[in-house]
Amino acid sequence: MTTDPLLLMGEVDAATSRLLRTAASFDAADLAAPSLLPGWTRGHVLAHVARNADGFVNLLTAARTGQALPMYSSLAARTADIDAGSGRPPAEHLDDLRRTADLFAEAVEAMPAEAWAATVQARKGPWPAALLVWGRLREIEVHHLDLAADYRPADWSETFAHRLLREAASHHATGPTPPSMVLRVDGSEHDVVLGDRDGAPIVTGPVFDLAAWLIGRADGEPLSVTPDGPLPTPPEWI
Image (tube, rainbow, N blue to C red; front, side, top):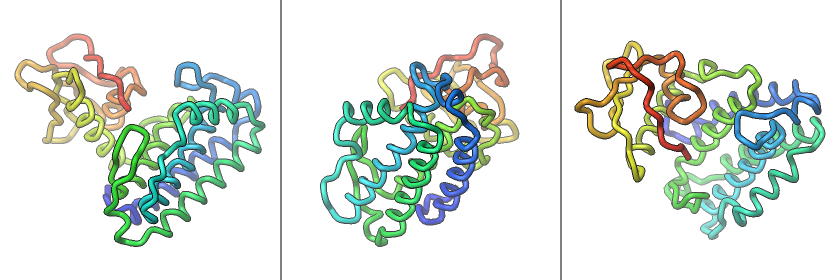
């Protein structure tokens, strides 16, 4: 998958269209049903995706103008906005998702080439502006799974799944208690190694299932472990 943010916008547009189709299928009862995220309904997830777009617009604006704009005014405000928006009628959710997706696309289009070299203050610390479009794509694709509405890891593109797998592995490897495991994608000759390879379990399977399991969005049922035994428990993802 390309790292060029402008070329990656095609992937964002396609992922947004898929999410909008799912959101358009929900009635009020569907939105009030639980998502895959503990304590959140589907309405919470959709409200979060919309507010995330607003947050990324803030970061793109910061990169373009040099202003010290945070992604969210505060974590408390972020939580309150999601809670307040979660119970809206289906049409309001859909309008909000469309509007904020358009604002994100406009903010990307407004970026001069040199602004992509900036560093911005994301929710968990400094982040290269050049990764903001990838971050938005990741947000849409992962939270689409969280809606528990027949969107599966196998619906991701293979390039997205590979990038997500390697990013999640790097995140876990630099954590306070990195696990030791070898991740082996079916048909690939290149393992992804976390921690000490010697004696580490080898977890094998399709890249979609490996990535979803590593970020805590799947139980890993299609995966196999060598030597035979239970799957390791991945650390908490971002």
